[in-house]
Length: 379
Image 1: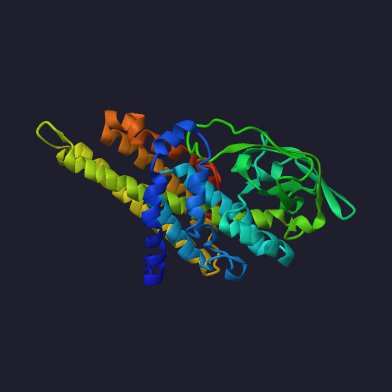
Image 2: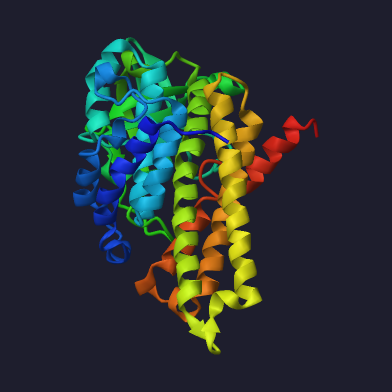
């Protein structure tokens, strides 16, 4: 296991006092299903949004492992999982591909404001008819002089209703395979770009999600991230970062949930003794502990391997699968341990179960991850 330096521990610990304040009112905000702008602004002040980005462009200059470790602390300290999800979506959707694949002009123009959270980022990948099959997207980008003209629509755009800067993936060729996709960086006010209303959803309700529409949307060729036809390479890089960052938050949330369940099991009495002394409850808590340990093992193993420049495709897929399914099991276990109180909205436990289900769907479903792992096993 990784030994964290004092500087890394101090950086993570520096967030915790503020995260408790940000968590206040999280149950009510979930029922309102509004983006928590005030809480976003509080997080902006911590500098967390600039974690992995160049110091010369306003970031904190932290490496991947430190970023993942600090984001785990965000999940442990902040009970607003929707806000947490918006943080990681913002970070990986625009900042990560911009830093790796963007021109110097684009980086200087946008990264400082992404690092401060003045601009909110999103990316538009999924389409109504293609779902998990990103290569089947129909949104087209046709070259016209020094520009591309984009037409199509996207679904499930997290942060879309509040985003200022969006990475849009579109088809630039009819030939099959990954070389047909290109990534574009668009401002919200680009003519021909529009957004639908926020779509009600099961969980992560404070992270707004909606549709995006492109109608003869003219984008300068200078807005291409990477090169024309290189969008799948951009997307592959982004997805690995998205999994590690988003699911680090999930392991932090699981840690906090386990601590609350242990405290409840020690203090809640039934039949004259703490419920934690009953084998059915204690075994459920043991399973939560094992699930958390397994999740953290795979997550940080994948992060270490990727940070070392090694091929971590299999480890990232396993980490995503293990963390997401352990997260659902942990949340369901918490509802059972809290019993009737866990089913009531005021405790915030049922919200965590609703939130956790999304983790088995976004960033590649559990079924997709199993297919990927199987293929890497030669099956």
